[in-house]
Image (cartoon, rainbow, N blue to C red):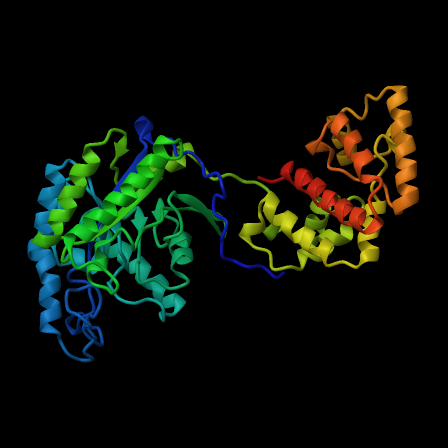
Length: 471
């Protein structure tokens, strides 16, 4: 099967209402990444020094050497930045989720004790703060297992959340396969949590952020002033708060680092932002594990039709009658590049209509002639397809008077003699009066115009039929 794995649809135009506790308009979730002592360093057995997320402009790795300045900036995060952030959030009564690199946590027992005493969630940030994109799958699986083991040993309980950050294409699948995580956050693709089917497991994904994130103090283009950080966070919050007030609550993730936001000139912006959100009612500031527990309770995984997962017989059986008596359209559509974006009415309609539009005129004419006359003899004899029977009944065409039936029969006969195919209209867009009006209006069209209109109506009928099957 030609299947495209990326999900470009998500929740579509109408995301679910998360029903946050207390009717909150927005969930604002703060993450503090604890990486200090887990970064690339020859002392840790790595081939080179760290070069990522520091205040050193244009930093590059030093192969085989310690980078004293880089190490000291990471050390600032552990020695000073962490404690400044700890004071801010404990005084503000906002609990954090820690993304803790296991080896970093092992080198910072006093900070771990403070995290636990504050009631913060300590999620896993992997074994080491290194790049995983070129790591062999078996090696990454082993690193995940060792991260869990060491984390459990250091913290006293296993992590329930996971975020690698510098991940590979295998990371989310491998973490889900481990089976013990309430959520994984190695995505940036939504404002709400969602379930990801990975093998036999439905894994909850709580997307993270790299935009509402203090890492932009260390990248270009980024922020050089704390006010830029504050303004961005405030604007994001105000937008999400307004959406929540309008009935569509969302989640806002904010990413922080001890060595970045823990600096005096940067934490001032964070302090202003906390004051801003605490001046609003209906703001929930949970740990990520609480979001995961809430979502699993309120929005458990739902099983529905997954067209992109179907084999060909099931696909054709399910969608072969969408275009009247024309299963060949579904047979051809199955061979398209289908993916999660097609697991909805609009997706399958697009695929089916592509095959209908690219068919020969003779094939499309065959689809038109497969449609029954409106209120014709087949309807009277009860020989319509189930779809056509329901559609005609929805417009009252099953309850015609003798005079109305005679008028429909006469118009049908005249129309077919002129155009060579039955009069076709999406009756679910109409009522008996508007159908009759369209009949009189369209019957005098030239054949080319009417052929085009009939094809358009066939696609509209398909739209309604698919809406009965898919979201």
